[in-house]
Image 1 (cartoon, rainbow, N blue to C red):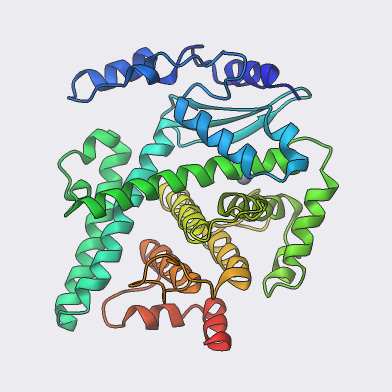
Image 2: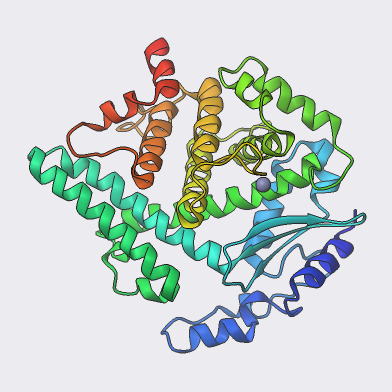
Length: 372
Ligand SMILES: [Zn+2]
């Protein structure tokens, strides 16, 4: 595999112009009416420079991070993958390969959809705090109102794109902290999505020759897991997706690096859950049939969070923060899965506290019971 060929594959498959994504006439038109300007280093980015891994400088750094986070044995292959942004009204994130190259494509529609779900997650978390201090009836109204507003906003978004969320109070942030956690949620979700596609290249699901070593690592990791039998019973297509989810999450959390950052795990699972919730709700892929290529997103979220909690569940999610250091990874995972089920509409937040909601999730709950 060579980077030059991977780049060629990206431009041949996507038919994007061979200029910076940010200098694309469609992008310039989009920005024209707004007060925003595109920084010159984005406009002048060269997607075809010899060492360029993307048509966007930000995605280029994401790819460099993923190469550094890879097991040293994979770095040769990893550093020859090209990842680019595409203009498309379809919410795609995909990996393609041929004999001599591998590419990843992520669409503006997909990245914008992530934005809406990240904003909603911020709302969800602050509503949990707020609901603790109001009556049951007020809380019922709060949660149903929020759910309806969110579903309506997504319908608007599907018809009118990100522009339709202008002026929507989902995009209004009470303070800088709320805005910065919204921005980092978007970053982590996109990072995880690219890592998922990158993982397909590392395991070589997209070609016929598989990397035995990576497959063995993943098999060992899931062997003793409480969800191991469930993963082994899946079709090989579906198992490839579960493996890419797991490998992406481990990569992003720094698992293959000597100096693992302790905040890597909560960031990584938040990115994973937000990406999968976006796919599930936006495309209505919550559940699946056994013959589908991808498992349903509710299963993907549950299986991934269970595996991660088996390894890191009792680690602090905020090790450097004296006020929040008692909050463990398992708790963050519980919150994420509760958000997924609430967006899905399978649980109400009205009469029970978040603890009760988490308790309905037998698998996660088992860990809480065993370890607490
Ligand atoms: Zn995949």
